[in-house]
Amino acid sequence: MSQRLRWSELEARIPLAELPSFQRAFLKLHRPELSPDTLPLRRVQQYVSQTLHLLVRQGKARQVNEDFELELELIPLSYQKLAGP
Image (cartoon, rainbow, N blue to C red; front, side, top):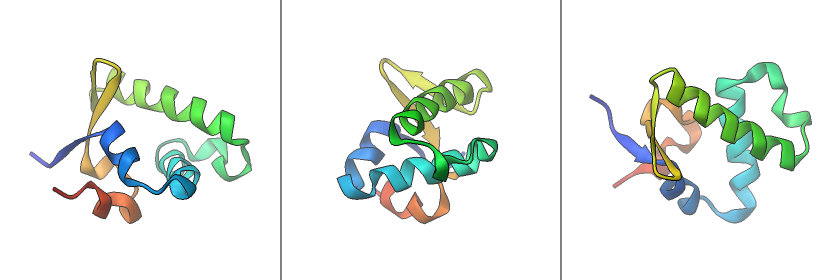
């Protein structure tokens, strides 16, 4: 089984200025049809939340209270290094 990580912990490791890029990369990986680079940030945040819930329904992630637990491979490759120990 691969490494699991909490969404909130990963977001906390990403510098605030990079967070929109991370969220867009996450959507490009899971919802490329949305063209995340063209969406306003508010929409990106809404779609990230929807996508996390969708991954839970698909059995690819778990909801833990108000947070989400995901397998490392569900995170864009360029951000996986931030999921470290």
